[in-house]
Length: 506
Image 1: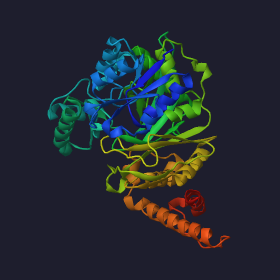
Image 2: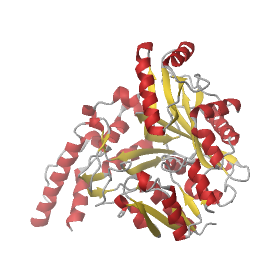
Image 3: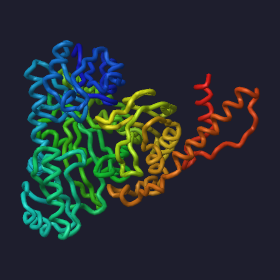
Image 4: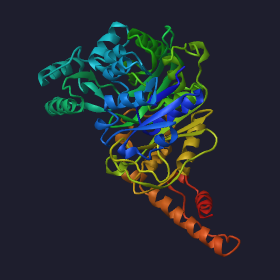
């Protein structure tokens, strides 16, 4: 087993890896930019090394500085987390050349699945169903028009080297085609340095469902069931859950078998995710493979009881998978809400700033993976995630109920805006509760005014509770007083907030 692991990342995923290291008795090394000098992952690690200025390209994305930090601290392995270098074959090779273990798949697997068009070809050859579309990359609008005529509108135009929701446009008819081609080509070139694109048929009421896979170096490959990721905005996930409320037991078995076949086709090792799109008739098609741990991995951990990050480390150290397919089962239901410093009413633009007060939810079935703390700054240089909030229940109704409670207890104030009320709106929406949604849910249903009032009601509750706390502290026994109304959806009790403020006052 490794003695010391460097985490080439920041925020909540770095904290998550540090905790797995601690469980295994392994020392951890954090790297940090000048903007992250006081970050939570720096505080939590056994060692911390500065790697450069705030811009990621000068710090977290500087290969030599990351490797120098590993050499200086004697790290014998590097965990990339997600984002940054996690799907960079060049970084993986540089780590190996330095005599350090990369905790992730072989660089060849990263390369094979990094090019979306080549991945489609590979999956098709392996018998994995792929969405109808162009067999190769395209360069002109006439080529796109020919494919559209063959598969029919609407279509999705995608960057070949894309990811994270970038370089994608849905085209409904021929008159939108030319501008979409120009936009995608330009965005692909600027975001990925690769202007190539391809076409896929746009599915009817598409669901985005992914399957967690895991493989060791000894030839064992398993799946850990599915995650439902259809609640998204701009092709980026917002809420994830497991199991999916959409698929049948037979579909679950088939998707799992196909996902394992896909992982074996590229010689995969470690934790990865096979992503699928499913149509309203429950036909499913390969979308892409993420060759890393996913942001939403906690929902799988909650329903399977498997520590995926710990398993990543063990497999990278040459150990066999500690479980087989027959050992795995889904138990209960789990949901994850991604809590960001962003403004949903202004088009989900980042709204970072300093956190003045933060109170995290707790209680049965609730887990919070946070990357910040009270008094910390959510930096404008990086992804503005505050935390991942996860709720588990014996069934979906209980999980949703616990998520509502947890969202009601979650308090963040300061010079920033959060999407907490947006999530409260989602978990109260009848279509979400019924499991009747697809990837268009937010576009179809969300209007800023629909969730408006949550912050105002929350603030009113805080003010009323503060006044009550003040009176209680000066007038002896508390008098029965009318309180402000709870926040939207009945999620926040002013009496709970009174208790929190009274603790602060003392």
